[in-house]
Amino acid sequence: MFVVDKNSLISNIGGRNVVAVKDVLQKLHIQIIAEDTGKDYGRTLYFNGLDGTVKIKSVKHGETII
Image (cartoon, rainbow, N blue to C red; front, side, top):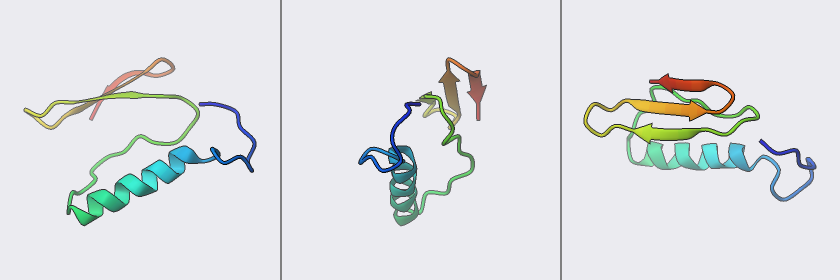
């Protein structure tokens, strides 16, 4: 999403966040059935607690429901 120096403290923060979340989900025995991570654009996620669907919205790629 932002251009940063590879040696910067904030480089690969997204990748570190993904690893941290996957570790927590594994400890809670929550299975990951899909993911949309990485790349160079931001996303907003909307979780529907009634049916378990997730809407992913991004400026570059519109909406996707998983």
